[in-house]
Image (cartoon, rainbow, N blue to C red; front, side, top):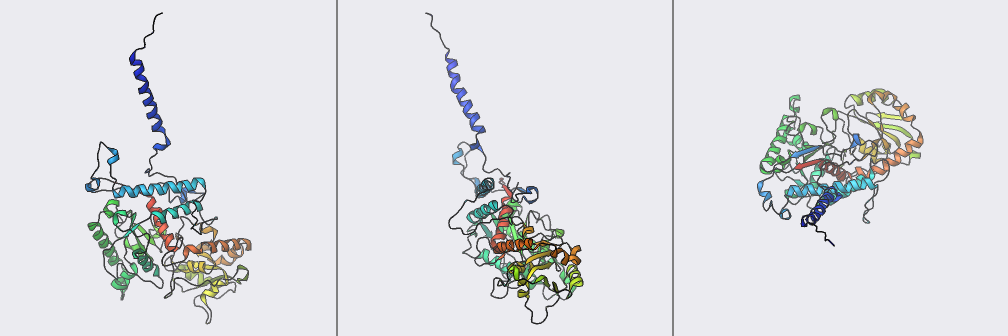
Length: 477
């Protein structure tokens, strides 16, 4: 019987074919996904991701420059010996945070921790699962380097009381050695804080103001530019990101003017502002709107004197000076004219402002000379539904909070119809608004040291979201 001979070359093809199939499998395998991919579909809105996608595709992709010394120890031939730079480690850390938030959005569940006593729930949050997981990732990972350059009182200092108290409170919190967000070294920081106080610059550089010409912002703007140049000359981080991972914090009305003289220098810079006016250059996807809190000496807030909704006998309340055209219009139509809509320029003798808010269903919050006002936070403390009468105001923490669920917005053109508009709201709807308002109060309370989900954490979370939206690409010199 004749034997059959198989050429050796045919057998030698079998291992090659197997290897080819293995390579194809690995290429298309889900385990081959790149964790550093900057494109991620993440939104805090369950209904309108196109509008509210502040955690979607990174809005700033910066090709930074890294020193060649940061690449020491790398080998082209042995990938296992590659040592990542500090920036690459930070970007990997952010990629892991994005992945965890995406997972929470997809699963619609909370990655629970038994120690945690609060979980955001309900329709006051655009996406409570995303918010909870994002806040959790922030508290676990987020590190901020506060620049040490500069001297008091213009830098590292700020007011701790009165109208602009949050400037000083925030600076003090960031520089407190107990602060868990405080970076020990700049190379481990996700973000960089420029700790100057706009309020103190005005107090020590401008005042006393003796003429209208002294209201020009040039000295403030020169100070800010000079400070940026100092830190940029001494550290690589501003130039590496073109300022995209740097921020300032200002509650003074002049805060937005810091960057207006040099828009190119501050193009990527993040401004945390109480005066968040979109008609004056506030950029919702880059800047942060901060709730303005007025602090009495030695206090971190006002007591809650709000009555039960059933016992609130005043339909709407406002008391304040005729600061700006919107308030002038409000006083013109309603000042001391109606027992249900109580509008006063000055309170009658013996009346208590906070108690009157606590007896009112709705508290009118018109703009003054600027859009920012502590009246909204005062309304929340009094559990009095805020009626927002402001043009071009970007409401605080709108990344995660749906203000339509716990406030009322009336256009300036509707001032003469305030009573009719508010009376048309069914009592049942008012009760729901008021209950939701009580729920969000914790996000506007100030604590020292800061506590999870309080007003400082909310500001930090807004910064954290914007850092997630920045992808820094390392480059050699």
